[in-house]
Length: 248
Image 1 (cartoon, helix red, strand yellow):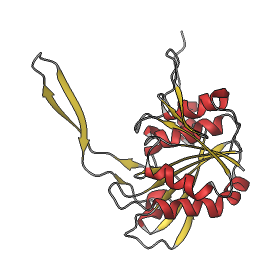
Image 2 (cartoon, one colour):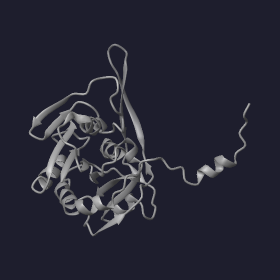
Image 3 (cartoon, helix red, strand yellow):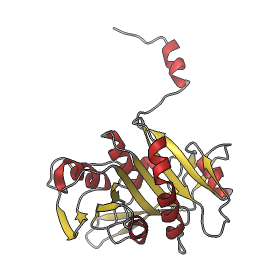
């Protein structure tokens, strides 16, 4: 199988390297990843500037664009292959619930699915070492054929692995949770009067909800969420359909 691996933590990320090492003995593995950390880039793509791909090894390319760029341009010919499957990760830190709105890891997988390729995003829960990269990579290797069989063109697969402090005891098929952010802006003023801001904040939490990815990871389960590509407005659409809008 030909596998394209990307991420948002950068081409030298230990999580990416763990995936490559685990998969390259059984598969043809290629890498296109950002040349530096590009976390939180969401699904931005480069439209008005050139995107540089630099070959750093036989099947390894560093890109100066966004995580989505690494997949988009790779599939448009930046590398001399077309993959059977795309894997993004392994991300340092979780991508649970509404995290996937911001996540470059999720975006790289989403970009693959948007053009009709099976695509998987993989993340591990802890924000600080130790990270269970090897266990997560081994799980992907052992289940890649099954994940490929389960995938369909309307979604990408988002996997989150529990922290090493929790005994992994099962797999849960989940839906994305509602994450609760406590963002703060720290600022300082430079000598010329400009004000600079840094985003900080407390720990991110989630609403407790049966069947969510957050609940699964907290319970020591590997969370697997099929994430739809098209936005779904669910029941709220009926409220709008019943509203009486004024049309001049």
